[in-house]
Every structure is written in structure tokens, then in C-alpha cells.
Length: 106
Length: 239
Picture (cartoon, rainbow over the protein chains, first blue to last red):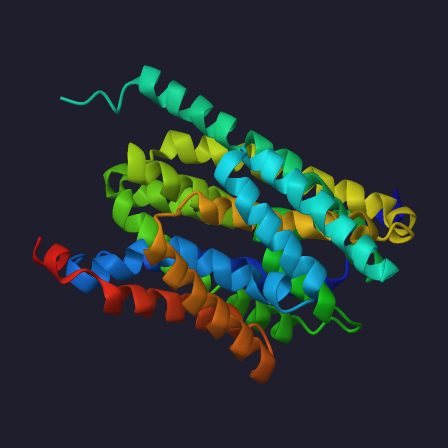
């Protein structure tokens, strides 16, 4: 039980630092939009945020890791037109495992 | 008059949130277990791992932090990397913040503390259709938060046991990008979306190749947003 609760002061500091940094990023946009006028190109830019952010996080993993990951990403994307989210994730996991196994055999 | 403030609407908004997040809670199981196991390998106790999950609640930056982890803990570098990885939240909260003003600033300050990518993407999706309330966001956030906390703790407790299990062999490492692909396609609006995806993807990959650290996320996000602003239909700008 002692090992379970073991803590290090520098670890606590790191966790606190990460938590504060993360919370600040999560509320700063809220403060920002109170001072900007949401019209025209600003509005078009904000509309694109979801797609742009989500893509930026995964692009290096899915497009620049190897052929198995890229192929699985394409299959997953096609599945997303038809399946609910959990099905999409299942297709992604299974297809990347299959592509990796297949490429490993070549 | 709308009845958006009534207890009945609040309750149904909350359960709508629960239903929407349920598949992602399941999909997050392997990701949370893997994170816990990695944290244990770097010497974090299960308690420290769960503390990080509850205080930070941002998977991407937690994985990056564990990657940096060393003895003594480089807490300044870790804090800065969390800031970099999560700088995208500025754009995310601006976008969703503009759509949820009816919630009130005080409630936004609480709800936006739980703005993990998945919670945010589903909130955005709902905001485009019928509006996102505080109750809906809590319906998304609470199960996702509790699951992340508990499952990363389980992963850390099993630690070395899970270490022998190579997540890549079974494709479980791909659950995270697969969730994101599914979320992206929820926003698909044809060619225009494809162009934004292309701009963000190319910019993120190019940046990652040349710039050390987590700048690539911000670079890709800004590139996609700028392309969308430039390509905005002039006719719709009049409105």
C-alpha cells in the first residue's frame, strides 16, 4: 500500500505545472472571444478549428509513420462514413494490426 | 420562449451527453491502460498517475510528459511541453466559447476545465445542430473523466504486467488516432474540409520534421485555420 501512495515533491510540482498550463489554455479562448467580432473571415477561421486541430494532432502518426499506418488511416476514414464511432475505432485497431502483420511478412 | 433552462431539458441534455460519450469511454480503455503502464515504468506510483490524470486530464500532453520523465523530474520542461501540446486549446475554447455564450461565463469556466479533445469535439458537433448546454457538457465530461482517472490508475497498478504486452502488436496504439479520424469525419462538409485537412496535415508533418518539440500541433492548426479564412466564400462574408 505504501508503494501505491508513494509521492515525490518534484512530481507533484510537475503535475501542478501541467494542470495550471492546461487549464489556462482551456479558458484563454473563452476570454479571447469576448473581445473579437465574429464576422466574415474570423468566423470562417473559427469554423475550421475542429478539423484543423484534430488533423494536426494525428497527421504525423497516421501519415508519416509508415505504409501500414497510412493504409489503416484510409480504411478508418472510409469506415467513418458508415459506422458509429466505436465501430470506427474497432476498424482502425484491427486494420492497423492486419496491415502491420501483412507488411511484416513481405 | 425556449425552455432551455428547465430541469427536464437539463436532465435530457445530460443523458444525451452520456449517450454521445459512451463509445469513446470504451475506446479510451486501452489508451488509458497503456498510459498508466508507461507511467509506472517511469517510476510514478499509481497514486501519482491518478493525480496527474485528475489534475491535467489531457491525454496527449500526459503521454509527452511521460516521455520526458526522468530523475530528478524536469518539472519546468514538462510544464512548458504541456503548454505547447495544449496550446491548441486556445483555438478550441475560442471556437466553442463563441457558441456557448448562453451558458454564462462562470459556468463556461467550470465546463471548459474538462475540455479534452473528445469532449470538445462532441460539444462542437452538437453546437452546430442544436446548441450545447452545461448539462450536455457535463454528461460528456463526467464519465470520460472518471474513466480516464480509474483506468490510468489500473494501468499503473498492473504496470510491469502490461509492459510485456506490446500494444503495437495488437494495434491498440492506433485507437487514439482512430478516435480522431472518426471525430474529424463528423465535421466532413465535402471538398472544403478536404482542403483544410490537407493544409493542416502538410504543415504539421513539415513542422515536426524540422522543429523539435510539440510545435507541430500549433503549426498545423494555424495553417488549416488560415487556409479556411483565405478560402472563405466572399458572398457569405457579407452576412
